[in-house]
Amino acid sequence: MNSIEENLKQIRKTIPEEVTLVAVSKTKPVSDLLEAYQAGQRVFGENKIQEMTQKWEKMPKDISWHMIGHVQTNKVKYMAPYVDTIHAVDSLKLLKEINKQAIKNDRTINCLLQIKIAQEESKFGLDTTEAKSLLNSQEVKSFTNIKITGFMGMATFTEDIEQIKNEFNSIQLLFETLKTDHPTLKTLSIGMSGDYQLAIESGSTMVRIGSSIFGARNYSH
Ligand SMILES: *Cc1c(COP(=O)(O)O)cnc(C)c1O
Image 1 (cartoon, rainbow, N blue to C red):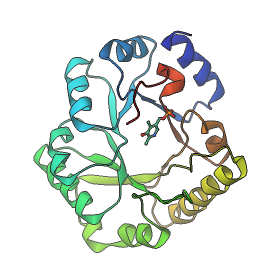
Image 2: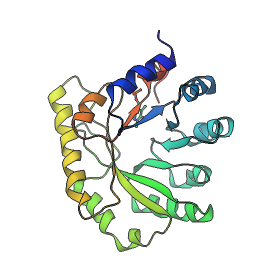
Image 3: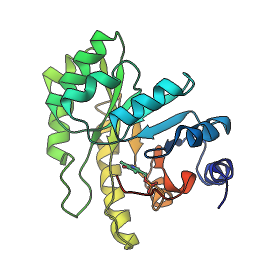
């Protein structure tokens, strides 16, 4: 197996410079994160708040921490002191709590709205109408300490490349359409180890890559 450093180098070669690489380090030990850090990586993604907080405590402080998993409202307070971006925001209730905790910490927290693009029945994510109504909501506009910086999506887990392309194209279209009226929308977070090249073809500005950097995970999260 290649080292984490070699994997990172290989991946960086294949993604344009303006695309942000989130190194998804969930389930991996701090020693692996340090190896990536020493290779220059500064953006890390985790999907469990407790695990991310423990890693944040141990790692150097010039890291951008991205929460990529589903977030329960009552757990927001634990990451509010340090989290940079929350990727899977899918309700007004959650935005409200993130804003409240961001105010308490005198910070601004970036939020991505998770858009449901997969044809498979997934529990999470907004449809087009719901995303638009959140972006246009007067209450959301009144939130002083959050910024809705873009959209996040996950394609169906399938070998069918055409289907993945269609799903990525649908979120790209929504993103490009709404950007005009909502200039804070800058980030399109699509693409994982198996499909990030297709995502970049569909305008991804942020890829979330785990196993291709750190190796396969022992158990699925
Ligand atoms: C685990 C995870 C990833 C990374 O998956 P890999 O296939 O290991 O690259 C990306 N996004 C989300 C939301 C994840 O949970």
